[in-house]
Image 1 (spheres, helix red, strand yellow):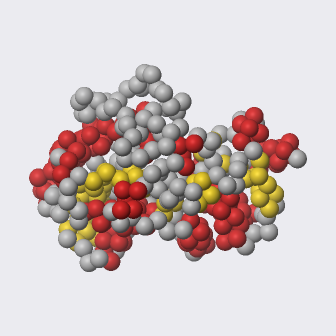
Image 2 (spheres, rainbow, N blue to C red):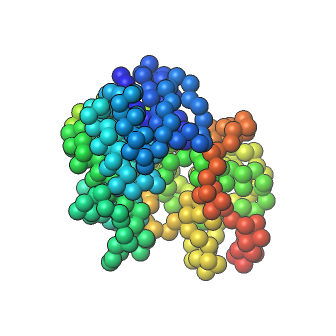
Image 3 (cartoon, rainbow, N blue to C red):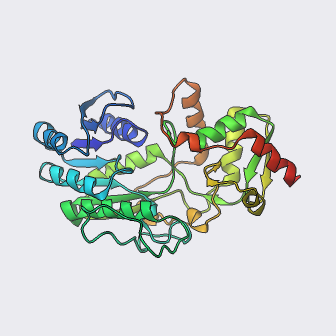
Length: 343
């Protein structure tokens, strides 16, 4: 089995490559080579997905492949994804595209399944996306519409029968560069009174990056059109369980102090970032992943992800520097002020 991994240097990419190498597959990675890590067992090709000459060189000199696994299109336009798909269509049998649940119109305010309505893609996916009118979710839909356009670019080029669309919610685990779980782990380690957001029984649905990697590799072997949401079972994991796991894993003497949503909102705390993974929108914990489970997706317990991420951080590993890291976490003075006001 020969596969091409687009974006093999960060987080999900290395997990996909490691899993493929373990299976004995022949792996090529295509990255800019400016960050990330060298991955043993893979042929590393450096180039820019936004440069047609680099894509042509990749296809001509290193193909063909049985499958492409695309892990790095989160910041690309539909035009760029379309150009890449067109360059690879003749040298790859299948395209596994890691997208996002944000492609659904109802995200994050409504329960979601693979039957939920997806944002309408542009008539021509090679056009640049503008801010759409009439957003109904209360959340800026530009990212979701752009990702819907990139999905369309893949399926229009490879055809439905040769594509798998994987739509995860939140990915956590060793190598995370966004800073969500690492921030909570470091905050738990500091101890003291720890501001815990909302209701401890609130469901959360993060999945481990390694489980997504395994499923993406399995999808490379599938035939026919596949569309799957990737999320932990609804109700199995809770915010309380997640934060208590952080306290227990770090050996902290800290105490979780739960403060209700309305208090946090009155203090102007930014959802999703200042207190990572805290969001009051009900759709964030109502993602139906039944089709993925039926296709073999297994989501490990969140406590295992927490423990392994802490072990990875404690081993001296450093996440790839990324601008999103600085956006996550609450200033200690602000935390103390909110806790004082809450009693």
